[in-house]
Image 1 (spheres, rainbow, N blue to C red):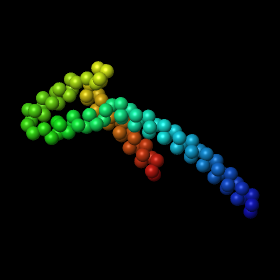
Image 2: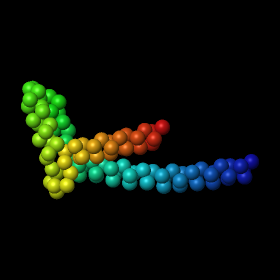
Image 3: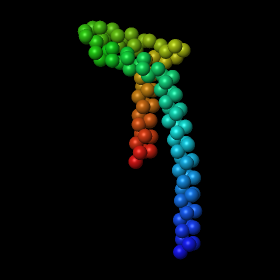
Image 4: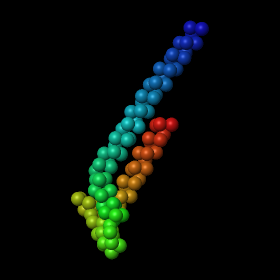
Length: 103
């Protein structure tokens, strides 16, 4: 009987070790993705989207949307639509990881 408990105890310790390793990996992945979201200036992107969504006149919405398509990021590398697509992909990934962790 004692040997069975020792086997179960040993297996639980192994599983706990594996769980801690997996948690560390997931934690690093999520932190990296959250830093990427910050660097993409998520708040600026959302504010611009809501300006277009809640614009009062259709012509104003169209002009704003066109200006956002041409606008470049601080470094001049990525335009608004590319940044928006990147943010959507990152958010999708973070939500997917969260669902996996919680299930």
